Image (cartoon, rainbow, N blue to C red; front, side):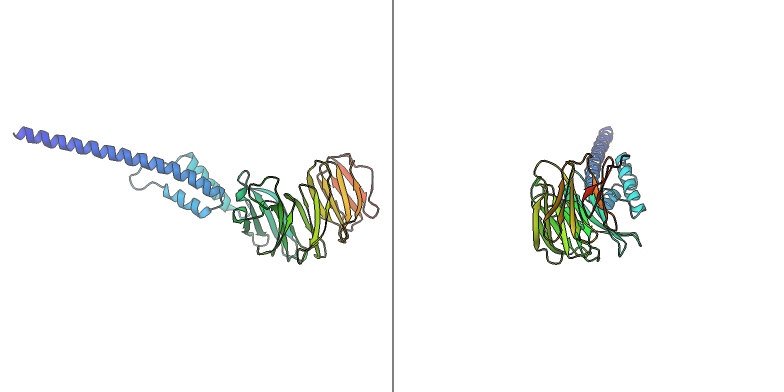
Length: 316
């Protein structure tokens, strides 16, 4: 009888040990599953610039007393990314596609691209004197989606941001949001397609844009009222650059199909179009005194601004 009692106690102890072992294994398996799920969530939070959420999820994976440390390469990689991001105020996780400076105040506005997750594109304001930065617009907050270009008025009062009007609408209409430098929206100007370039006239009375369909339009900078609209391209190409002359009287546009055009900025009257440049142009700049125009590509084309006559090409 005593032996039977001891056997019963032994079997009970063994059963409890098996149950405990199974519970421990189940608990460990649940921890592993949770670790994997929350690590994925941490990377998603990183892509969405939600750094507080990244901190929270990383901290939750720290092992408790007596617990196995499940952290692997993926945890330490993300932790080091976060550390490197915080180490320098001007280090960005996303590709900077374009930027513009408010020269009066030493503030840069940069477009941060996070392809293919275009909903996470940002417009960031960076104060160069203090290295302080803040996000003034995210694509997840609304248009413009896929911001493509920015420009700051010379008086430091306005910021223009060009991009796509509708999320996920490839080839759809575009928009130019004109904001105060704190990010507050003043007005929006519709465009026929994705806006590729935007600029303010030097006297800040006029602004203009160039979209992917080759449509150039000018409007009153203070009100957003459309003044004129012209089509630059009549065949397939890629619009790249739009710029006012230093005196604000002329507007120039460039595309990658070896074409450049010049309009009277106030009326939209075409002054000249050149469609046989012998380079693949990338950018266009006026000289500070407005006497020359430089087209940059594999080599340089220089034009006399008053006459719009081409000088011989300058080869590299």
